[in-house]
Length: 425
Image (cartoon, rainbow, N blue to C red):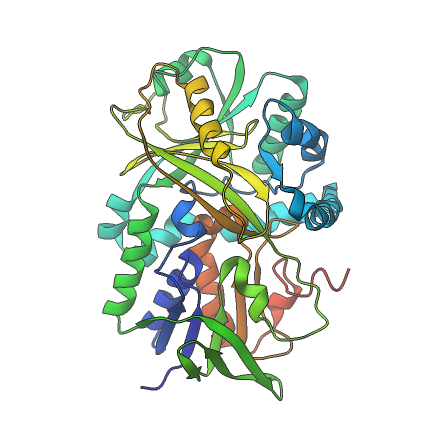
């Protein structure tokens, strides 16, 4: 059977892209060495919406970094074996922490995410969307310190400049939204018209099933090498033999750079490790009905870099940014620290841990993914590096990959998502 497109990687970006291409009339083969969504797409916090526009590298973040590394909020971890790589990465990220780059990253993320919910509804259809997503408002928490107030103000300014309204929430409303939350002095804000994924694994399986129902093919396959000749990919070699296609889409997360053709491009990407635990949902944690005009679907702690989401299989508590080699074992204490964090916020809620997970986010210094045609191979489209925001960015990424395949226009190379952006600087 002939294949128009080979998609390497069956995370949320690869699955969404494969489904769109198959529906548009291409013959698509989706490849992955593991089951669909086995990596960061499975373990993410499930946040979706236009509020995801604040990049990781902000001026305030660097003032907070010592506390995040060594203080009571310790949420950034550097393993000793990864220290040289982490220092190089943090130095590069710090060059992004200026006003001009802050606005470029914000505008790029807005362009990618501003219609995320509409994109998912269109891609899945209303019948599949409804059981998989919980619409509502994302509530953010900042500790009541001067530094945190500055960060909350920065996030509000960045959003409101592009029309994403943020409102301050009173302690009384917070108590009604989260009936068992500990009383404390903190700053709470909310962004409406967001959503939470109820079950990331079910979402990935739904995408895969719809892709197969549309005529697509999925194969367990470990990609090893792309052969380039005369400015085009000629074949893909892996543990399942040699494969050929007209177009190749690289959406393999943090492993994507291992498959890139040799070139003079500087394409920084790091495997930033995250953790989560799943707790039994013995009773509702969030209010199910509107409180003062909104219903919470996500609790995002901007101070501790943690997210709490009610999912179908329990309560997910996600957090940490750990710099470690992908093959190194998990830090067991991270799971316990996530549970202690949950206990601080919800001390009366029963805690029965159901499962725990760690995985690797494909992160870039400016928080923007690479969505571009590779200059050394005209039929290779790259779509990786979505970091913390893959769930929000998947629908638009799939659409843009389709546009790149349909047209020889290389305008994406001049966009914020260009593969050349760190080489040209």
